[in-house]
Amino acid sequence: MGSLGSPAEFVLSSEQVQLIKDSFKAKLQADVPYHAMTLFINLFEIVPEAKALISFTRDYTGPMRENEGLQAHATTVLKKVVNIATNLDNEKQVEMFSKSLAELGGKHIGYGVKLKHAAKLRDAFVLTMAQGMGDTWSGDVQAAWIAAYDVIEQMFVVGLVGLAAPK
Image (cartoon, rainbow, N blue to C red; front, side, top):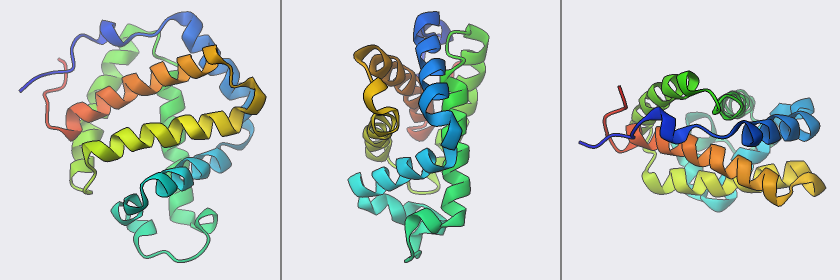
């Protein structure tokens, strides 16, 4: 069994984290539930079978934005991603997040989530950030968010594929 590696390997620069904080506050913070739903709607467009992996979307036939169960879940997911992304310049926080995300990845095995789904969620996430930030989605902002997402995904995948989380 492998492991993720040292948390220090996953610390972002303070400049990257500041770009994430500033861009989130400027464009997304005012309506997190909307952007969270956009993330999952984008995911379902990219990976239609992902709908079947979530209990409250599996048999839902109405407009997805009106699905209260998905709204709550999506909002929680986006808030957690942002919380983690805005703390990736703190090695102690990174260590804590690496353990909790690995555990979360392990839980998602039971939901039928596969490695390919995690990779496609990245595409949906980047698309959602670009849509939400509009003309402020610069190369530097994009690079910071992608770096943060990639760290989060790596930590999550440790549990998803059954690797040992860093100690």
